[in-house]
Each structure stands twice: as C-alpha cells, then as structure tokens.
Length: 402
Image (cartoon, rainbow, N blue to C red; front, side):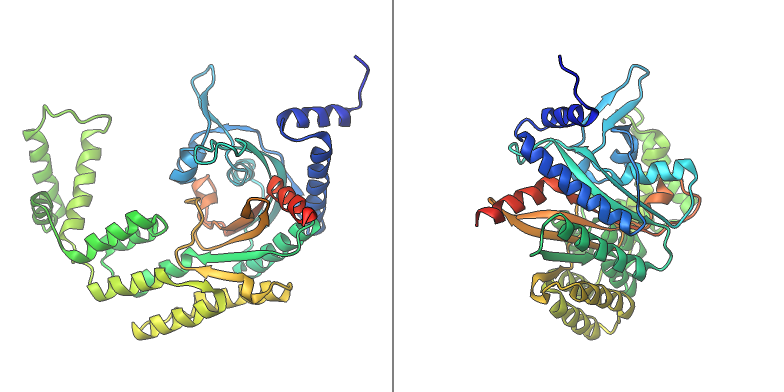
C-alpha cells in the first residue's frame, strides 16, 4: 500500500465514519469546523479533546430522561459502566474540575457525539459537535452576551446568514414560583418538572384540585404528625408488611420516600388562582418582545414583579438585535427548556432550513449548578452552546440549490 500523509489517513478514517458522505463533503465539513474553531480562538477559547469513552454515571444522573434513553452504555473488563459521550459539555466540565483548573475559563471543542435515534432512524447515531463553554464568569449578563455573540459569529463563519432564534429562561419560571404563595412541598417539584409538559400539567392539576385517594388521606394524617411520631408510624406500617417484596430499595429509603409523600399530602393545596397564573405564564409564546409585555401584564395582575429576570431578557434581546437579527425572527416560549436537565436559566436555539424543512443548527444555555454537581467545591456560573456541523452543511447545500 502506498504511503499516505497523516492528513490523508485522517480524512480516510473520517470518510469511513460517515459512509453516506463522499470525500468532498467531508472536506466541506472540515472547512466548516476550521472556520468555527478559528472564530472560537479569536475570542480566547482554548480547544479541548475529552475522551470518547466516559463514565456513564456523569451523564445518566445529570442529562435528563431524553438523553439517558438515547445513550450507548457498555461495561469494561473491570466492571466499570461506561458510555459513548452523548454530548461534550459534561466531559469538558468534568475534566476541567478534575484537573483543578481555575476560573474563568473559555473552552471549546469539535468532535463526535453518539446518540440512539429511535424516532429518526434515518439520522446518524454519531455526529459532530463544535461548541464553546464559558465557565466561572461571575458577570452573568456579560457572559450571556458573549456567548450569544460567539454563537452567531461562528454560524456566520460557517456560512449561515439567515437564522431564526428561539429563547427561553428556566430562571424566569423559577422566580415566578418563588414570588407566588406556593407551598414548599410543591415549589421544588414544579420547578424541576415544568419542562415535562404532560407530567407538569397533571402535577399542577393534582396540586390545585385537592383530590385525594384513601392512601393519600392516610398519608396526610401522618404528615401532620411530628417527624419522630410520623417516622414511628411508618416504621410500624413497614413491620406489618414485612413479608412484602421491596425490590432494590432499603427500608430506610422506603420510609424516607413515604415521609416525603406524607408531607406532600398534608401540605396546603395550591390555590386555583395561583395555578391559573402559572398556567398563564407557561402559555406565553411568540414574539420575544411581545412576550415581555405579556409577562409584565400577567405578573402585575397577580401583584408581583419579575423585574430582574425580565431586564436580563431585554439585555439578551438587545444583544441579538445589535448583531443584526431580525426581531420578527426571535421568539420566546415560557415552556422552552431544551432537553438537558442541567440547564438552569437562559436557553437559546438557532434554526435554519435544509431540504427537509426547519432544522436546529445550534443551541445552548446556562447551567449554573452542573460544575458543583461534578465535583467543584463551590457553585460555578457557566454557559455554553453547541453547533451541529452536519446540519449546518445540509442547510448550506439546500441554500445552494435554491
């Protein structure tokens, strides 16, 4: 076999990884990636290359159900559970924390991610992501603006001009719940599940209806007891059903779960007026500028204000419009939270059109609790985004044919 250069061999391997792409298309992907990475570097972002094989637990515990069920897992000869990385944000953050590197940090990458695609079997299970992560910048507004600017510049460097933008803010909803008279037992649960539409709606209905089964009534009575008495009562119930199979959970875990359910059952039900305010907020969707007015009108009628998160939202919109984005192409959805559980606040997606129709070409957001969950000794503000480079190329091809 004749000798080939390292670049030629790398290109051959890349072609093998994408059997549906010819060498010209692979070269186009490489050029796109180079343009994006050059843009990242011009803003001081350092390239990282985390391992493709990752500890499975860091994804399965923090990514959310949507990603968990699409993650490829395996066990190594030593019995350790591993996975093919379904995204690169978590390993980038995990390795930064593990190394003990400082903050703020500007990191970027370009590499393969792997996800099972049961709903879209025509989509590849491996795909390239190029992305940037801004970790530890305390000025969150400045970080938001920097990431917005970097995302748009990188997409333009890759060859995309016309974009539609969708934004949301999990923090806005959390601030609303905190401002309302929501029982403590429900507050955290509503925040945690609001992006799971059907489950959340059922949860909100249950919280505000006051409907209860006999079991819930029993738990409600237990929930009014002092903690020691409640625990004793539940321990007695456990003794009565000692022969009942309990699966993999320990006795203590079962008692703790029953105590939580008892506290829920005993808590004051959610006022229907408050439930309507929450539902009204989650129905707001459409023009981002119009959404701000709708939110202010809704909260004013409820006697509360959300000045800080709305001011932050206006600042982000100003950043988008200053970069030439058409206000008519920027939408807001109160229910929009993307599909990763680690997002905590501002989220954004960029959309374009390929031959099949609308397609998301980039997206990201703020994840201010992730690094601490991965081992950081204190909370670290963080925000980032990812570009799906194959989708960008598909949009460019579609535009070239029109």
